[in-house]
Amino acid sequence: MNASSSFAVNGRYLTQPTSGVQRYAQGVTAAMNQALIGSGAIVPIIAPKAAPDPRLQAMPLTTAGPLDGHLWEQLVLPGRWPGRLLNLGNTAPAVKPDQVVCIHDGNVFDAPESYRPAFRATYRVLQPLLAKRAARITTVSAYSAQQLARHLPLRSADIAVLPNGHEHALAWDPSLARKDCQLAAEGRFVLALGSRAPHKNLQLVGTIAPELAAMNIGVIVAGGGADIFSPERLTNARGLTLLGRVTDDDLAYLMDRALCLIFPSWTEGFGLPIVEAMARGCPVVASDRASMSEVCGDAALLAPPTIHGDGFSAFGNSRYPAISAMN
Image (tube, rainbow, N blue to C red; front, side, top):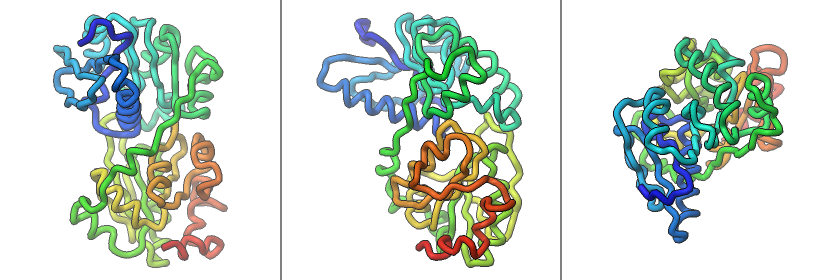
């Protein structure tokens, strides 16, 4: 570790399952590494002992132990790095004032039923402390900034908005997709992604699956439930295929062949699968709630995330024949 480094990165994200939060951290550090190469500057990534090495030339990994998880972050990290710290994954040492913290959303406040009690309690205690003490709070959308300002002691105008990127999706290789994924993607289908937490609203996908099946369109749901979420049971409907966790290359294969991505969440800080799908040329039909209209702009079809009126159930209605014409 270079003692002259002006700041370090909290590398706890390296030990966590990959979701949108971890992809954000990976993307930021990869871009930062490219900017640092040639300058002679070194920015270490400090992580628990179990962390894999991301092998970034200008951002060497330094592991510190013992412990992991929140205990490591609160008890080990501040002593290992007393200087400025960049935290990209929602949490940070509560005692440090000289740090930047990216809080991706306020869903533990607005959708508490989606999170396990211990996780929810930790965030509800820790994030207000970080909002008071950190030098700067950042987030990933203007909607998320407004959401955080409703629940934390800071103004939305004081939160820096630094959105997610899409470039990582262009590096996925569909030719490396697993055979079971290829078999599932035979025929016409729409794709839904995400954990089965209630705010993801994937139950709606199961509800509309029979209507799409009547149009000879299958529904594939990819993604598993992370430990932080309270799982929602998905209806085992006709035409519905549950793939569980998939690789990035599997995801590329599915997005490249899907008629569209269905994204019916009630709330999201950003909605990373939307831009991943768009980057790979997959049309998107998204909820009109929360950050989705901000992220989609006019590049997607937006609909209320319900089965009533002009909501997502309209896929099975002749008023939306365009879904049948997509290929």
